[in-house]
Length: 96
Image (cartoon, rainbow, N blue to C red; front, side, top):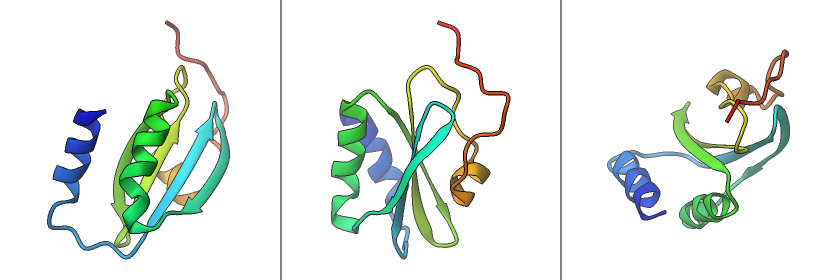
């Protein structure tokens, strides 16, 4: 978790973002999308990692997006995340 926090802080350094949107997937389905206050972003990242989810981040139109997805499934595309839609079919679990 320390590595994830350090990578996020390094990525964030020098960026000016207008807000944060957390977009979460369970399997191929979008399960929720919420706005996250700036002072709660790191805690949000740590929380989902502690629950066993993967996390990635990107800036889109001066806004931070946190992409959260379930272990065993492919990572959703940024296009799906920004549009807040389910992953396209066919849905496949990753093999172990």
